[in-house]
Length: 500
Image 1 (cartoon, rainbow, N blue to C red):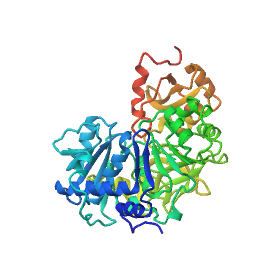
Image 2: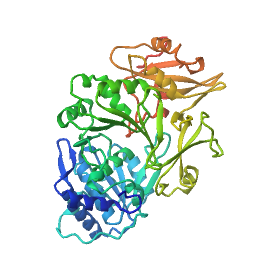
Image 3: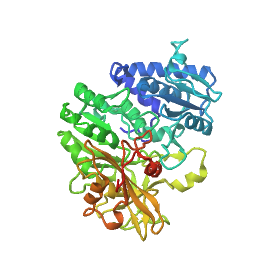
Image 4: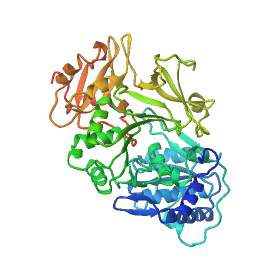
């Protein structure tokens, strides 16, 4: 039985704690583990502590935690929802000004935070989960909550502008979750390993997996390629989730050659599309794994496409999963035939999300259950989705519109390229031309060599005019490259450009 509309999030925890009180829900490397019974008990105490401090149903509560605090964060999240309040997940990677903006935007009543994190400024009362768990072992009954009530406000990562608060109801978060033990997801695994940060949609998906899926959810206190590889070898997880930037670090360090990766049967990638060359490297590094790419957004979830890597369709992102919808439209919103490039829209299979406190932006992004993804793509005759680029990243050079993703995919075919990002820079005649930032895998690589490599792989108007070699690429907390910061790198004297 699925919980498309029947469950609120705290139902999932209560049922799991009744079924498997001693089952391990979550493990944080070096910082302990938590059973379902403990999760249920502690979150009930947090809910009681919140109500004693005057928190009412619908109040927004900020949750500021780092990756080593995943256990306390999970307790706080469920405690907030049991009190009938709305959880606002925040990352410790945010700048203070970003945290302050988000808390002010949603008018948060209070902030719960990690033990080693200072309380954010702003005049709100703050506490750790432990502060709220003291004083009573007999928590009162939970607040009355309905599936349609707002449960979470998650702020987008802001690669192109100021973050927006995306509201999700209990029905949205609990969609597709199951309560029958024999129907739980990832049944091939005793452990599910990820390193997604708190405050991201991918991280929230892992939190729901801890409530709903078969394996115990395992995460490092801090991601490094070496730590991640050691966890795979030690715990032998059957399921592993990464973002492409993590996969690149792992592969470039050669850790798959020094650690046993044979336990991994499902390797999932999220947050950004995998270039085919990177997919091939991952397939070789994880010989027993089915490599799967997930495409969604904070606004669209749980709508998504899922694609098992297929050499016959190396750049495909799959077809709609779990009852969701997918279409590619023109600027007027009318569906386009197969093969034509247009705007990608997804339809949630359950109660859709919305922008909190921003009706104008919401009217542009959410229409009759459909969500505008902000990406350009096309569908083939079999309904498979192909991503062309972010709308904001497409470069118009002269009379041509160029997909930066397509040029990046060609760059990843170079054996010396570890990471690549393509972006537009001003040009006095063409308006804009392409530039590329390259992180080498190991040995030095020249800009001239890279351009020569590309000459027979991309069209003339797709060839970057400038190539720079850098130590790393600017990324947001979700691991996505912040392309608006790349043009500034061209003026850095430490960088190598063609002709140096």
